[in-house]
Length: 87
Length: 269
Image (cartoon, rainbow over all chains, first blue to last red):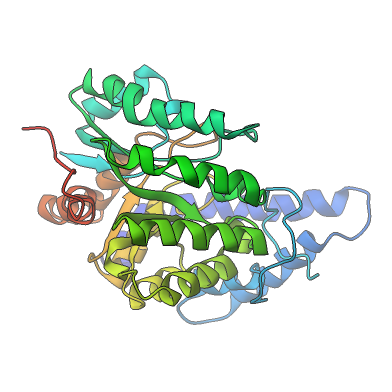
């Protein structure tokens, strides 16, 4: 696909998602409450997104990933929250 | 268009979904064992589930001219209980000879715990001893990268396991290349809220090629779309892929991988 074709096919969808992210950050700012590691992780991921060059999706995923390498002692629960709490 | 749904949890889906998939060109659906959304209380629950996967579900699919295949295991979400896992592993061999069973799956990790790794090793040993294909689930979200690396360590640590007989599913941009570079097959799961969107899945095909890779809906009781594969095929066509190129990814590739099991047969066209 040419760059023109990519933009024709995906720009409106990407624009929609970009505004959703902006509105999400505004919503978090308006809400009362303390700090949350997910909010911080999201802001870090946005910095990864803003860096120039290919591989943005991979960089964002890596920034949200558990960087440790050893199995944990025990699984407490089954779910994942989308960002590594850092412990 | 024809396609294979290589990963669908049809026990969670309605008969309308079977009808829609058949209408869209689905020739075969392949169903790995998974977590029911609650922990089963004993091995008897798994026995009944394996009967459902190997007896009842193929009959539902056949009503729509669709082949149905299954994979058996105790899912990583229930692997923290090693004693239960050993009980389940003990009954799997009595089902492996059933005509629609392709192998062991979806095994893997969920929270990357020591017990999960131990149960994964036991499943890999069973697959090696029975010369079974392996379908691997990789963890969700922040746990995926670490889990994928741990899983590949286990598989590569068993010299009896050939990577071309293992598919590592739910890859994304940060895990796809390392899975393919290690010689494994890679599966991309098309989910509306996590894993891959259709656009990202096609991006990965553009980046890493069309060999040893498939797409699936992994439709289950959660937010998922049973027609995700044909919808992504449509998007591939909109991006300029030829019908033959689409057919390779959505039909020929899964048939090639699962055809390594002699029991895999497609319905006559």
